[in-house]
Length: 117
Figure 1 (cartoon, rainbow, N blue to C red):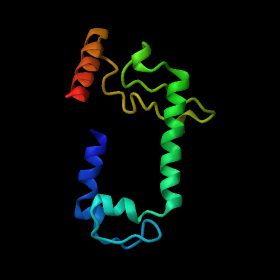
Figure 2: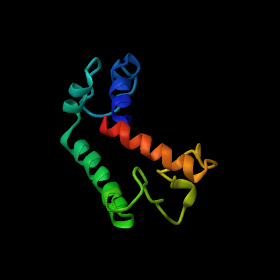
Figure 3: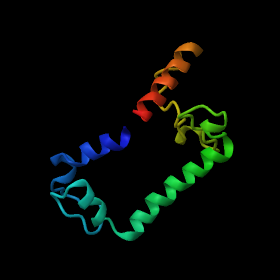
Figure 4: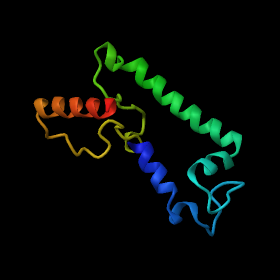
């Protein structure tokens, strides 16, 4: 769902239109999202894929996969020496921290069913 929202955001003139300061070398205004990805230099693509791979590995090492008994969608908090710089990626803004366990379980099941749909 976040990927689809990103695709929509990249399709707007605000993101794909001309900028006063170029976001990266080789930026061209007016491109569609697939053309924007193609225009990113190889080094930039490698940085993005490496970061995603590191986050995925971190999550799989510290918490079991949801098919092996873990919570679907759960990402363990990243602990560091400067906690104000590191957000909890599972609850970044704390919207649902007051929900009961039953409400949380129902929400997880709804999310799984949406993914299957």
